Image 1 (tube, helix red, strand yellow):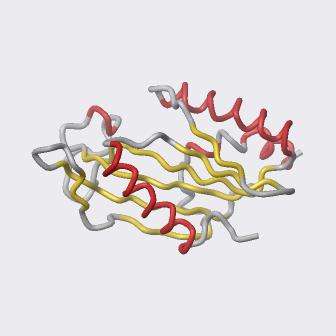
Image 2 (cartoon, one colour):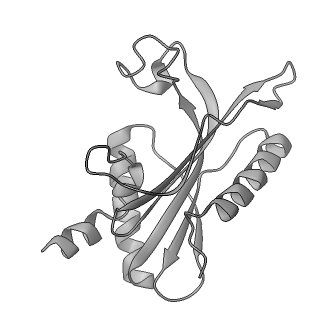
Length: 171
């Protein structure tokens, strides 16, 4: 089975997301999950607003998916979100991106494997024209199936999805 973290699949998903955003004006968050047996799952999400609520939502979803489908191998989250470019925005890390005055809209794809030692992160910035249609900017970040290093582990909302599996494998 092809990894959800690999560049060709991630770029195909991003291209489809761009088309959907042009057509619909917004994106529904979608979670792609590779399970031990069978085809990958595609789950439309209704993400809560706060980071704590998102963590709890994804942790519960991870428990439910594992109970129904067995061990989760990988996950990739597609969403429309805010980001702040730390290279150009003062105080980029002092508040959530949704409240930062320099926030920008983006399509994001974040993924990780079950063991937490590989990840993917893609940020496709966009602006809106006078008719609110997306205008694509240069991709800000494109890391595919990268190893996690001890000095720079990514903080990833998908960690919640694997939280119970991570704890079980550590004991």
